Structures are given as C-alpha cells and as structure tokens.
Image 1 (cartoon, rainbow, N blue to C red):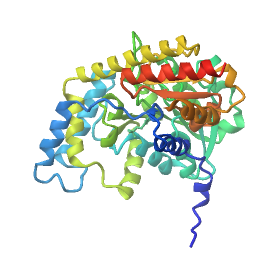
Image 2 (tube, protein in one colour):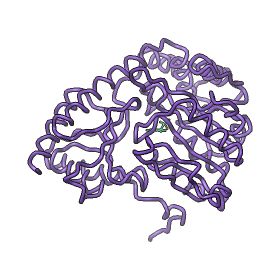
Image 3 (cartoon, helix red, strand yellow):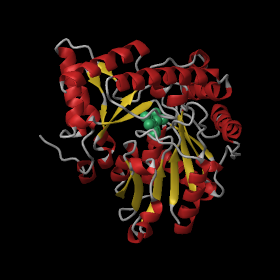
Length: 396
Ligand SMILES: Cc1ncc(COP(=O)(O)O)c(C=O)c1O
C-alpha cells in the first residue's frame, strides 16, 4: 500500500540535513572519523542549576499534570520572561498578554504561520534563512516570497526594492538577526526602519532573536521590540536552546503584540498542552538565575571561532569572522566553484570526514556557500581544519 502525502508536503524542498546524515553514516560505516559541524545543536552542558531545577521539579507532586495557563508555575515562567526582557532589553511586557512560552521557537514559528495565513497570503522571507522560516509558510499553505540576502548588502533585505505588487499582497515579513546562517547582524536603526516600512504597509513583522546572547566583542544584539512602535505590528521569538544550551529540552517563547500572541495561543490550545512543567521550572531557573553561564558559553564559542577561522585562513580559505552566532558562513573555495553547495559538502565529507551544512539547505540564495557550526571541542576543530587544509592542498 502506498499513501500520498498532502500536496503542500510535496512542495517542501528536500531536507538536506537528512542527505548529509546519510553520507555521514556511510563514512562512519567505513570506519571513518566524522567531525560533525553540520547541525547547530549546542554541545556544551546545560548549566548545573538549571538541571537541578528540573531534577527537583520532577520529584514534586503535580508535575505530571497538563500545563494550564492559570497554574502557578506557568504564571512564574511568564513573569520570568517579562523580567528577563526588562533587564536584557529595557522592554516592559505584560506577562499575561504579551508573553507566550513555546515548545521551542521552531514550533512557535510553525504555528504562528498556521494561525495567520490564508492561501493567497504572501510571506516575505529573506533567503537564506533558518528553514522553518520558509518551510513553515509552505506547511501552512501560504505563498513564499524569497528576498535575496547578498554579501554586498551585508545580508540585509532591500525592502524598498521589492515589487509593489508583491508587497501589497504580503501579510508577514519574517526576520532573524543575528542571522542564521549568514551570521549578519543589525543595529536598532535597522529595526526602526523596518517598523516604519511595515507599519505603512500593514504587514506583520516577526523577528526571531535566537542568537541575541551569542555575540562577540563590543557588539550587542538589539531586540526588535526596542524599536518605536514595533509592538504595534509585530512579535519576537526567543529560545533557551542557544543561550542556556537547552536545545533538546524544548523551551522557547514569543513576546510582543498582544493580539498576535492571543491568536497564536489559540492555535496552540487546539494542538498541544504546552511545556512539561518540570522544563518550565528549569526555564525559570535559567532566566532568573546567575547569567555567568551564558558568558562562559559565549567565551567558548569565541575561542572555537578563532581557532577555526584562523585555521581555514592558514589553509588558504579566507572566511569572515562573525560578530555573532556560533556559525561560520563560508563561500565555496574558488577552485571548487564548478560544484554546487551540496556537491561540495558531499565531497568534503567523503574526503575529510568533516560535515558542513550545504548553503541551499537554507534556501535558494544559500547556493555557493556552506555553514560550519562550532559545536565541537577546540581540538576537534583543529583536526577539522588540518584535514580541510590537506584536502584543499591536494586538490590544487
Ligand atoms: C534562527 C533560529 N531560530 C530558531 C531555532 C530553533 O530554536 P528552538 O530550539 O527554540 O526551536 C534555531 C536553531 O538552530 C535557529 O537557528
């Protein structure tokens, strides 16, 4: 018996991480040593006090029950999120109406689209992007419009150059800075301009701020909600996955426009029962507890970045050093320009065992690039660049 998937499923692009996973497995089966810099899954440990909060919660009565909006833990988590926003960004939020915890921001983005899109609504998504930002549009049955992000524009969308006909049918603009995969960053002035542009055109702005804490040097990532009037037209997604190394725990949140938050919460109330309350307790501990663990995490990424970027440079592969995120967005070396990004990543994994993510996994305008995630220890990164160096030298 064969079953036909829904048409919208057929419109989804192939999930390139699955292809890379298969290649990785083949190399491992041959006894090869794989250094996996493909997925952005943080390897550093979750802070101890967060783990303890979960352990304690798991032993407490009532943790097993469904999460409820009016529960004590639920209220505490919403307040912890609002307080964190106040301290972190000087943005005051009403925890009851402008804050909604999520089972990860990926889940939130997918349900946000489902909440708002009719099948003739366009979503403007800069490309490349984190996959749920564009795949979520297809899953929800909307129309995806890619705005190319180009190095010459510092990977920022040129909103004023968009076709008026497209813009007039657009309902949502989906942004995310610090940006995965290009590592581009913006300042508050960018969000001020986006807010004015979207307000004049009646477009909802969603901003995914997953990497606001993973920043280097003097750079500070702003919140979209710091822009004047942003809360009238948009929302911001956040996650515990990166700041607190809690990717597998599944905890994120969305904040901002109360009406948008209410509608998203309505959708979720039909679909899920919220977050395991033990994880909510852990989230409260993460947001309200000591924050030096975040600085430690960032310091580790910064050191790894130095080793990797300098190592590639010594191997003759010059890549920009990012101001934020734990990725390196690398142009395919010139002598391999006959290969597309998937072909290059396949060749690299076969010859070196180093796994990168092909740029096209992040959308059409990711072609010509690949992304490395700094989610392996320093000595493994040194080994990765050594192997890449040999590979590049042999191929000269
Ligand atoms: C931009 C961006 N948003 C969201 C996520 C996923 O976050 P979560 O684990 O909260 O679903 C990622 C993960 O890599 C990401 O890069």
